[in-house]
View 1: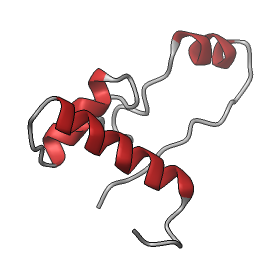
View 2: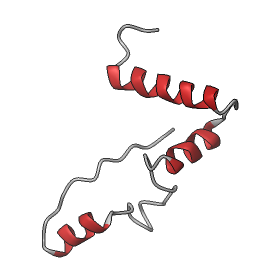
View 3: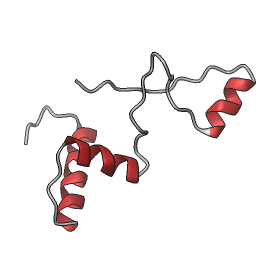
View 4: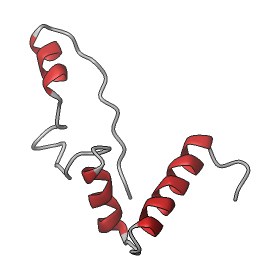
Length: 77
């Protein structure tokens, strides 16, 4: 394992590896994404340009009251 790899990345990579071993299945990118959605770690794929990012009810309520909380996002290449 790369000692320079961020700790959180090592943790989640190991956790994902453990979960897939427990379930006795190998997964590709789409399986990995589906696993993340099932665990409530990520949303469905959306078009930010046309749909915007999904918001929780709490975030939407904050937005309605004039708050503009940050919503972290990652693009996967």
